[in-house]
Length: 479
Ligand code: NAD
Image 1 (cartoon, helix red, strand yellow):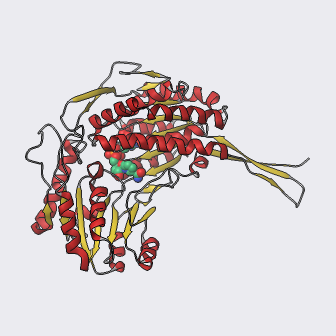
Image 2: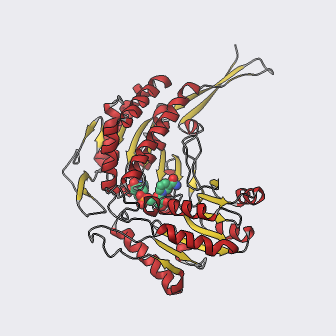
């Protein structure tokens, strides 16, 4: 835990259980963190609450100066590298991706710092009765950031940076699978000038901490990123106490490849997007629909690109695909491929089992390519959070859009074409929060990010976020 500017390796109140963080590539212990008690959660909330007054009374420019210092620290080569190595060890992703994630954090910070001078209140005059009116923006108070294990550093930035800039204080709950980088980041934030208590990190059981936060009068907003099931439970608990909630949940993104697209380029980009972070990305293209006339060419190009992937320990510079986050996830992926094989063995073109030469202590899995899978299959109806690519052929755009939207999820989707009419039809037809044309997964701090349907609600990033972390008070006066 990191509370009130100090690191705690065990509970503050009593010596209770600890969470062991294991390297998914080797099974080695990377570190242990405390399984917080309810007293620990209470202590962290009190500390946040106590820090709120002073932090919220600083000006936007004073707060943005602190954030700027944090960004500067994170850009130091040695700090960046130490964080990336730690992230790879506890999460498994290749070093190149871990470095990129830390870099991505600084881009988010720099973007929001740039917005600090643009914040303002609105002023109105009413001609009807000569009154003057204006709105005052106020920070909310304690804002909670609940993080997943797949991109813990970047998601921390998405949530905490706009919250801090607008004068809120943050209670951060990282995933038990991947808490160490977040704890290290909290320490760096404080060394760079964030006052004690302004950002506290508490490790432990998601449901127990979530329920306590949902009941705390100090907590004004909860921003959750994770699975749909956990998000809904938290939402129900938070609704009892009227908390603001943002849910960034799972996804089962579709990718539509039209017959006029550059097939070699599409295949290259599809393989990158699907197998990035070992397929454990919410906006990864999990279901690919290809026009019949280019289906064979696309599949051939995909198989060639996938055969170039190198599965291994993320610490090796030539690794492209690290392990899955746990043996539980590995088992899930094996079961998915087996279920498709049982339906039709010819659907499994490549991969789908544990690589024969991999370390048995690591949760490795061979990237799999499946084709012509029925829409009722589990790999089509559930969120497959691992390196399995599914490619089906479709007659035309109408059929492609019908299948794309045949899911509970609605996070992102992409269309690949140079035909403006096809692109327009897909942009309008996809029932999702983010549409890409001739790319997939591109995210920028200035672009609102989030989903519809089971993928959640609310957005992150973009200047609009600042309003999400502030209350508006309207004042009307006459004298
Ligand atoms: P998860 O739901 O298991 O856990 C996410 C976080 O929620 C963890 O910190 C966990 O401890 C906590 N948690 C669990 N139950 C809780 C409860 N009842 N109340 C409060 N907190 C609780 O998800 P995960 O396995 O860590 O992450 C993978 C999931 O996250 C995937 O579904 C993925 O698509 C999704 N994800 C979504 C986005 C997005 O922006 N839409 C981004 C990254 C990941």
